[in-house]
Length: 191
Image 1 (cartoon, rainbow, N blue to C red):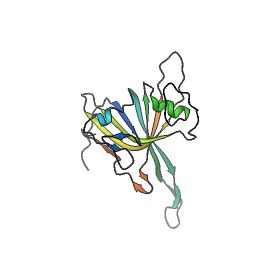
Image 2: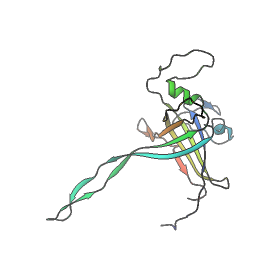
Image 3: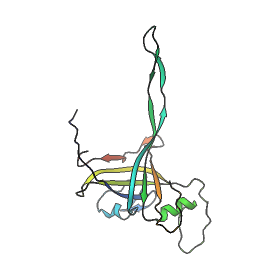
Image 4: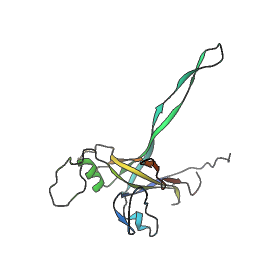
């Protein structure tokens, strides 16, 4: 086992989301087609704005059970948990189309045209999420690429303060029983 690399961290987050079906670099984005980083605008054109904070979360299933400790002895609890789902929740400073679409159940927003809210009964948007956690000197501490479904997490208020919506991005590890090959997390500077 490697010696632990301990260091203080100040992380800032940068996040980009490219929706399924969009064309980037002459390719239609989908679970099997992830945009590359050449040119960098393949991702940076799809910023989620200023990321105030982000938090990783997981949903677990408890499968603990009682097992005999010895032939004639008492039972002992065996702790077992399985992770069913992984997600990251991002809080943003700016509101874009993704927030309004998820909030009002719309497939798209047509500026200046009245639309019927609630046409999407299960408001979610699938696509590629790139999350970069930056260290104080401006180097990437982590780069995460996940095929996800995005859902609105927070119920923000329109009031005298700036609204900071939260969006939950849930990892989709497989589509139609096929592993999504582009899902990855990289720690380029060591953790």
